[in-house]
Image (cartoon, rainbow, N blue to C red; front, side, top):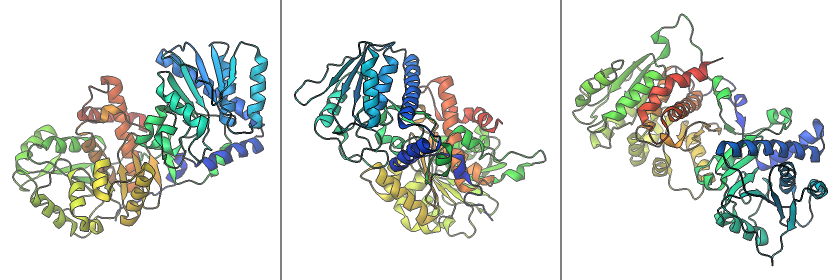
Length: 522
């Protein structure tokens, strides 16, 4: 009866997140099949990074007193040498070479020679263990080109000491491709051995490690720079990790037919609210309506009925479900989807009502949020009764209550994937790059959203959006990807209009029409 998972080849729509090995293979494929020499590909990549850096500095209105490039002797260091050469006509540039690896790469050697022959007064010095590190000031730019994405073990010796020193300075810090000491696709064991960038310019595709909240301290703000890697390789590369953007999400939208009527867009049930928390129910209901549901019914406690019908007049309400908290739930036969959790509290009667609901046959897909998740953590036997194709939307603490505390973000991601697989559900783990996992092992990291959305009620809005999309017969995977992106985009539009500190959850609802306009534009 219900479309549970993806009905189209959604994976072909999304920016791929590749492993460090695949990134090296992409470089090699481009060199062989464009064809282009490796040194010319380095020139192209560094030129693109240079322009992106100039643009970034202009946006910040920051003119560095001096630029200090710290280069290893591999290809990441070669990128730094090219950038130093290109920038030396406009800035005072210093190049500091850390003698790692023992044998310089061929492209590093070529670009060192080009830099030395330029004769622009660029200071080039090789660091040794017995010499002091250069003093850096607040108005200096420090550019990290020590290690690239191919690093497979923590830095040691002089390199580790240099990274620790650079982190201790007040200079503005930029990493090229990846902060040195950070791995593209595995966890870090010692944060002190990772360069802490204010800003990172990464080549062609995001690295998976950039997408975890705990790694923001290493990457800072990051930007993707296209360097023209061969599209045949990128199109054919196999991955199960993707990064959604506007162009991709547009392809998920199901246009409406001229002859459509409200019955074509589903009937959603929002189960929400308790004494003191009716705002959560109203936000979820308002968001569901703005997300396009045909009909909406709100199941709220008796005292909340007049509040809901005044605040959200388009929503129907179910009476006699409890005085101050939900004590039983209605017949769910008429509904295409159910969103449960915003503001319901953890009263025993509410838990009993949910347990009774789960015994019903032919339940439609559900969205679980907030106290519904907290009650699920207390009643793990419910898991087997949650209908396949449901969407769970925990924040990190709620996720910990469900599965425990992971030691690293990568480990937590693996737990999230296992949870989706075991219970045939979509898990939406909220964060700066909200991660969506599916039963077939696919992960989608979201590109939209901002810190202004870190406010009470923002999650209730997401619940309403997802419930509405499920009701409209979007497959669960598509509903999650589209809904999370739409929610974040509305938040970005609200922040642009109001500022991040001034935002409240209702502003996200109010910005949904403008967000839809961007997604539905041809």
